[in-house]
Image 1 (tube, helix red, strand yellow):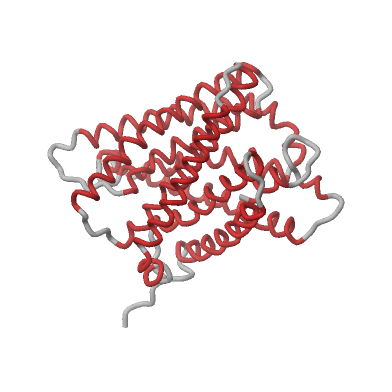
Image 2 (cartoon, rainbow, N blue to C red):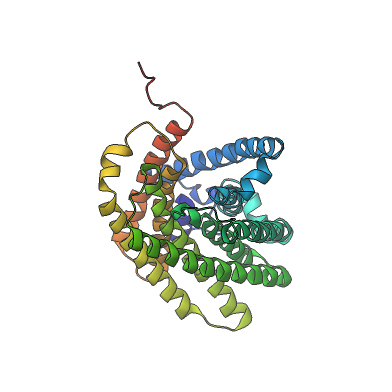
Length: 352
């Protein structure tokens, strides 16, 4: 969040903003943004390392991994590592490059090598999508209730698309940029196709049955917002490449995509805020942790990024700029609260 805001609103000498651009001094705003970015970057790599070790250990425990993938009710969770790795690519191209100026200048060259792990990530996502899709279609008559958690694979496609768009824009090798752009366009197409099918299914099911939603599942509805933002930004970025390198101008499509997806996100947030107002008042402040609470942070991240893109490219507004700063502050507060619940610092009191 802070990197995007500084990249598009702060003056900088190189293609990417870096810590060297603050050699002449700091103000309160830049200190706040850099502090949040530094802590977030360190936390990201710490959690990536910790969770990766735990995942490898769990996957080698007998048939645990195989059983998990075969269970249509829970196997959507397998896309979480893909989301995390896709986010790591964006962290490397943004915050890491900011704090390591030499790396920032070398990014266009290093991206040429980065296309290989990115391609592997893309293939892994495609393979996992096929494996779990089979369990959703052929369940041997087992009843499964799908919720908005079921959109996690769409989230993964959006994250991979955004990472691919970043590689496309940063690459200086024309062949690397071309390959990355093709994979990005495939990721956008696949993600939006799955998003449309699943989104319609979930809405129709909810309208037809009007079932009560369990408390831990309510925050999962907010996953719609970061998904919209990921695809909007990926389309915006890839449009810049197609216009300059391929002579195909889709800037109008990019503009329409950003406006429509931003508008849908705002509407969905307001709808969920009204529908789940009691959850925010009585459940969220409680010490109980469940994974869907991370979705509240993702909402603010997505909105802030879209607001910055809109401010810098379409409509410069102090309101959008102020909203971006406020989103970062609120997201940091919510992240801290949820993380403390996650690690058990804040936990339910033992029954007496």
